[in-house]
Length: 285
Image (cartoon, rainbow, N blue to C red; front, side, top):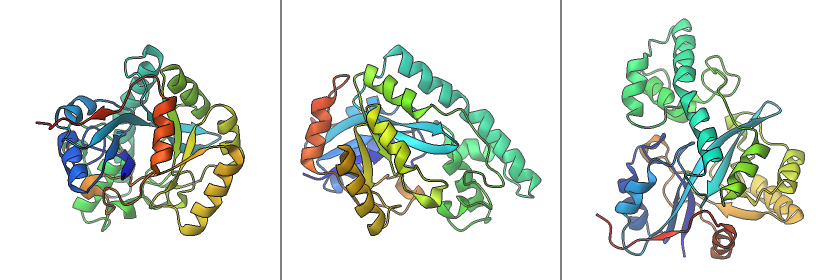
């Protein structure tokens, strides 16, 4: 089985619609794909309706978290999307995205970059607006050559010249909320240094004690040495190890299935979840 547990659609900051994403996943030879848009489950219904035969969809979301000044992302799988407390927290995070984006645009304007809210809103479409949309605007304007080049201290990286804080969930609270909604929690790309400050191993240990299920090890932003270190940490803490593409369509160069999760780990994730269940494809639309 080929299993990719971290992808994004136009419901957040990917460039494939949810329907396109599942079709592309099947074409890429995947057996299982998780749709984990940022702080939203809005793309799930469309993905399920278009799900090709032979492909299973894991519903999820990537939750924006912060603790001790460190930004981190929590992959939440197979939770009940209507559970009130988790739904309210996701909406709180999502509602802060627009004022934050406008504040970042104002900072860029002060730096002489002629980006506008209208341009960013056009790029975001119906998705939850975020830094990748602003980065795409900078690419359009010729300020940077690629989206990744916008995530530096010069521009949009945490603490960068145009960075603005937004509401983010405490990761311990995120674990509590996801577990209460019957879901499973995996810490996304915890050692992706180019994104800013990384999650200390001491904090990962504290998160594990609080109920964290796993860590995403095989990721494009982790070099081989980092992956080996994280595997050792996972063994020490009794955490599941996942791998995934973090696919964003054409916004990033990584392909679906570039990194995958072991079928036994996937099986354990589905066994632990009680809020929702994987959806098998029946042919799609």
